Image 1 (cartoon, rainbow, N blue to C red):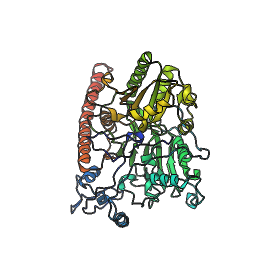
Image 2 (cartoon, rainbow, N blue to C red):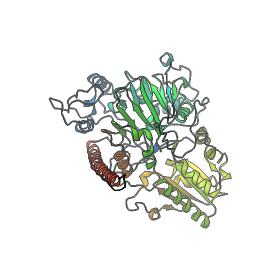
Image 3 (spheres, rainbow, N blue to C red):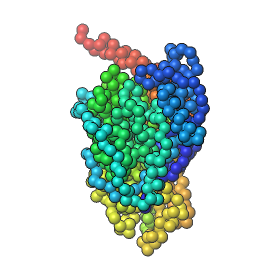
Image 4 (tube, one colour):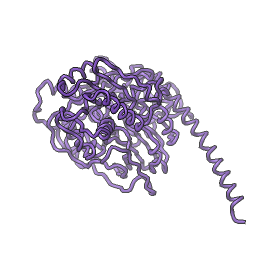
Amino acid sequence: MALSTDASPPPSLGEEPLPHDGDGYDLNDDDGASIGVVSLDDEGFPSQLPGSETPSKKSSFTADFYRCGTDWSSLMLQDDKNNRHSDLERDSGKKMKQANLFQIWGFKRSDAVGLVESGPSLRVYSDKGGSSSERKIVKPGNWGSISRDGGKESENTKSLRKRKRFSGENRATHSCPFYKKIPGTTFTVDAFRYGSVEGCSAYFLSHFHCDHYGGLSKKWSHGPIYCSPLTGRLVQMCLSVNPLYIHPLEFNTEHVIDGVKVTFLEANHCPGAALIHFSLPNDQRYLHTGDFRACKPMQAYSLLINQRVNVLYLDTTYCNPKYRFPSKEDVLNYVVKITKNHLKIHQKTLVVVGAYSIGKECVYLAISKALGVKIYANASRRRILQAFDWSDLSDRLCTIGMSTLLHVLPMSSLRPETLKDYLKTYKDQFTAVLAFRPTGWTFNEKISNDLELIKPVTKGNVTIYGVPYSEHSSYTELRDFVQFLRPDKIIPTVNVGNAANREKMQSYFRDWLSLSSVVLPICWLQCRAFINFMTTKVGPE
């Protein structure tokens, strides 16, 4: 069975979209409006507002970003803008949109490479000397001399066309937008769908979800790919990318790439997902979150405590005050309780958990541990899960569906009609289905943190619970993370497809940063008063 997700346009902040890999949505390049070109400074940021004659003294990157309206090409260099117009002419004037990309699993691949991080839990690194316990010089090697693989595909023509369409191989290559580039470097992040990016010496991949790796295939030959070890294994195993291009970087280790210090930090998203911290020779520091779920342990990352971040590339999937998720632990406990209660009444129940290509593993692992049962997943998914090298998970997998009551299916299969058909395969063993759809998009303001208010959808012998188990940050978690980090500039990376959404998020950022700038001085005054009191009253006479 092929693992796939539903294609859908990026949602507005007030809508509940269909889910896809990681709950997130990628960006639209532009909405087609046309305004003047903005000159960029040496770091690649706008040095003057659109339409103004002189640089604004109060200008900030985020202000320029939002004031540019819906045509982000105004923030590109003139050469990039000209290249983009040429691309648009070849596209017969169509607007440039980024579609969701799917991954078709199940093809035979070569052995994986690289090291693997272990365990699904968030690990906090807080060495006294900084977040890095080790420093490595990374040399890309002679990647430019590797030629494309011209061998014939073993899959049939129809499957090949489908894979190319989903991976973006057949699409016209557009100029890489500014928000995919790291200023002051020759690096890009999650920008594979643009092919060979002019001047790019290193392509970073934050995690293995299709809206981020889109454009990667066995034909990739544009440059080195830097990612976590687990992501590197999946890139080679599932996409057949030449391993000579894959450069796995260990977490919590400072790597020097083209003179830039790069450190990967745990992102609390899907397995292998990383926050990417860039420290430039000029002391500018950028943090790209990729997709992440912010949490308090991240505030213990010594790299983030000890050094100020100048620019934050922020995952804004749920940047809306209505999204205030319960903790992952609370949701897992709720899922286990519902499962146990249901099985007491209907013992011949098949329990199904929806999942993406990777992600949501903790949900079915929690049920497996609580009930003492194995986990059934098809061969494609088992191959991926075993690549994690998590013995706690791989030891619980089984190859025969009839041998366990716990099954994992693609999120798109969690529909009453689909589950009824699936149940027919096991009609001699099970008479009902209890399914869980674990995604933040199921969150309801009326329920808030009271999970007991969740009402399942029941049709005949199929019951489906939508539970707000999110691997993206809620609004309050984003706010707390930004106020902890206090970056100079924030660049949102999700839900920026129209001006209204961008302006909403900009107003949130202003509020968060203005509040943090007020709170910190107050805290400092309190601390100073306490120190004065202690030295005066308790100090030596």
